[in-house]
Length: 255
Image 1 (cartoon, rainbow, N blue to C red):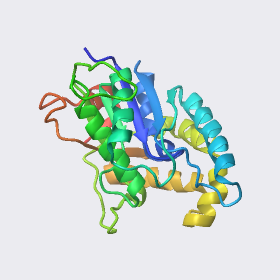
Image 2 (image 1 turned 90 degrees about the horizontal axis):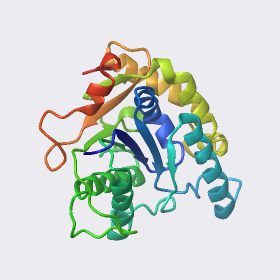
Image 3 (image 1 turned 45 degrees about the vertical axis):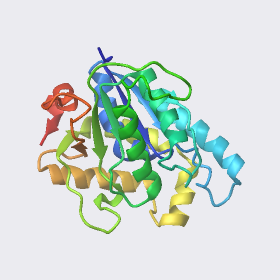
Image 4 (image 1 turned 135 degrees about the vertical axis):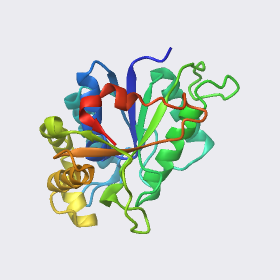
């Protein structure tokens, strides 16, 4: 049987805090073991430091953020703009899935504004799908695992796909009670304030996250702050009606 565990698999340091951390925190409150992984080191995320320095700084920040969330930290396996849907990375992500054996996988939207996010989503989905295949070899080698797993896709940044079309959530988790902790975890990524201001015009990244969660809360028509989710097809992953996020957070969950 799968453990009562959940893993968030995102592209870059701070992506989890933007769109997934509130749900992770609520699962932890309900007794779940939570795991935290950014596939990329974030090495390109600075206008001031070189790649090696940025990689070191962002690793320390990500570890600090995971500690604030109370999550098990998994180190990055790639660099920025080098997250490809290829066999090398798939073997690595699949090994992590087998180690954690989660019931819930949280990852990016299949449609987003950048390829790193979308490729991370594809890797997480295929890695979860292959969890019980003894003939698929992971790196490092890990034995296949049994049990249902449900993959949930977060809202894309800007709440739109790469062609600027609105993306609507299927379900919502009320993150109002954990918004302060979520902001504290995001603030641990200190190097990102300058970078996002310069590269993407996001002004205050803390304010940007707060405004995004308010917008999703408004979309829910029920909660003040929320994270929105779309459940991946159950085929090859779980039973038809399996929805562990709904079952775990039912008082804070709506569709």
